Image 1 (cartoon, rainbow, N blue to C red):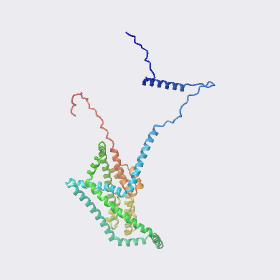
Image 2: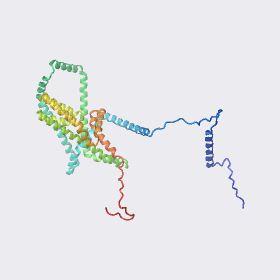
Image 3: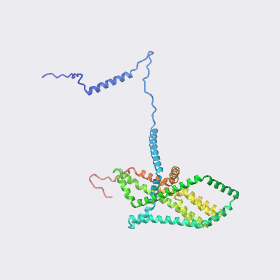
Image 4: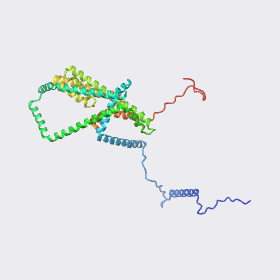
Length: 411
C-alpha cells in the first residue's frame, strides 16, 4: 500500500479559497493594527501617547427622549395648523358640517324615542326636524312681534331715562353731530358695507340651508353612512375605529346636553329676576338669553346687556343696577361652576383644559372656534384614548390548584 502524505496540498495562483482570503485579510488587518499601535520613542526617550479621534460629548438619555418627543409634537402641530387653515378657507362647508353634527347629537334622542314607539326612521326624522323648525320659527316670530308692539313704549321710556342721566344737552348734541359727520364722510364705505352685508346674509342663508340638509341626512341615514365608511377601511383597522367612534360621539352628545342644561338654568335666573323687578317683555328676553347661552363667553353677556337696557328704560337706574348685579353673579357661577364642572363632567375633561381650549379656540377661530373647540376636543380625546388595543384581563389563579386532566370543581 502506498504511503499517504500528510503535507498540505499545494495551492497554485488559480486555486484561491474563501477561507484563505478571509485568513489573509484577518492577518493583514491584525498586522496593520499592531503596526499602528506600535509606539516609537522620540530622540529624548519619551514615549508619546497614542493618537485618538476627536472627543464627542455623550448625549444624555433624557435629552434623546425629549428630542424624539419634540419633533413628533412639532409634526403634529404642523398637521393641525394645516387642517385648521383648510377649514378656514372652506368655512362655508366646514361650519355647516360641524353645526349639523351638533344638531344631530341634540335631536337624535327624539328620533330614537320615536323609533322605540315603532315609528319608521323616515317619518321619525321628518317629525323631529319639522318640530324643531316650528319651535324655532314660532319663538322668533313671537319675539319679533312683541318687540315691535312694545317698541314705541320702550322708546319713550328710554328717552325719559336718558334725560335723567347726568349728561348735558350740549354733550348729547356734540355726540350726535360727530355721528352724523362720520356717516357723511364714510358714504362710500357705507355703500361697501351694505354690499358686504348682503354677501354675508347670502352666506348665512346658504350655511343654514346646508346645515338643515346635512342634519336631515345624518338623522335619517347616519348609522349606515358610518358603517359604509368603516367598511372602506382596512380589515385590521375596523375594530379600532369602531371602538373609538362610539365614545367620541358620546362626548359630543354630552357637550350639547350640558350646554342645554346651562342655557335652561341661565334663562330661568334671568326670567325670575325680570319678573320680580316688573320688567316688560320677560318672555322674549328669556328666549334671547336662552339662545345666547349657546354662544360661549359673549352670547349670554350680549343678551343680558339687552335685558339690562330694557330694565333701565322701564324701571329706572336702581332696578337696572340690581339686575346687572344678578347677571354678573349668574355669569360668574356659569363660568366657574357650571361651565367647567357640568360641561366638563359630560365631556370628561378637566376644568383647566376646558378653559384653555375655549380661549385657544376663540383666538384661532373667533366665535365659531370658541363654540366648537370644547366638544370636538373632547371627541378627539375620547377617540385617541380608545384607539389602542385593550389590555388583557389579569390572570387569577384558582385555589386549590386542580390536577391536569381533571375538571376543576364548580365555583
